[in-house]
Length: 416
Image (cartoon, rainbow, N blue to C red; front, side):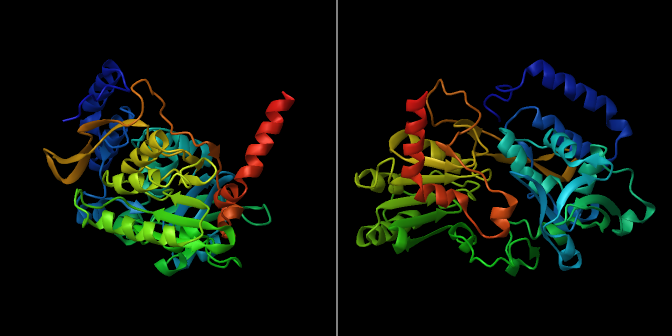
């Protein structure tokens, strides 16, 4: 199925680990076997080839796995509790120092080794899930064996948190059945207050920044007159492939270009930082931008990426970098410029409830000699917890200050 599974991992290393796992299986539980297979696949360094828990049987997941009822997010300045169910609202905004008996940095490093990803930004991306899965925390040794009550979904996990006064606080958080928390993860990488969760930014004095205004919409745009800027956000590329002008993506692009041409926009910002992929449907947008040379300039055309940017969204970024004069700003994407993808799912032969994904195609979107594992932005800008908590978008601010940044770089270059 996979065109070249050992492209990023020596075959001998993979087979050695496979044999070690095979010999351990008689002593492992069902959960430990599934997580160990996930760990084995992570050696391939292909984020598309992984345990597909979102496609696995939900009843089995609910009976087998347990989640913390909080969402942890690694910001630039530490890992914080981004959201929680109402019961734990007092924890939201706290910095995570330790989970169980393990410092948070060690937890994140070890979890990264048991979940498939292309690069370190993909590793960070999936910590959004894995930091809350109790069975994975047990696998890496962060928490001990569960209490006898855990089968009744009352297993507690100890956290050491740092509050606003920079005081360390020890707290116990009770885990919940997998599906009762997983519903909040479905398609929402950045939960908002109307989701049923208490979120870190819901009491901010500032209004939601543009990039968080319509996270539920696949394609939307808004003209910002005070900046003479057109903002286009594409949160998903799950549009059907079609060459006709009546295809959904074609029609949306036509509406967008009509609005762009009627506006006084001097800058166009395309935001795909929350886009996890879909299909390669970008051609109508690409052609429309190339046909507008007054926009297709480094100081006029901007693309925002982030750790969630993956798969078809990485293809989108690579193609726009290659064929336009776009300036990319933000956090690096979680996929390679040239990568494997277009997954096919399959069940384990002896376990009908578990699904895995496997890449079946190779996409050479960049130059053949581009072996980079990270799509590095032209201007790297990351979000701190204070930014997010106060609804501040430093990436858009960098777009606004682009000329100042370039002039400063030129000044520094002359000084050296």
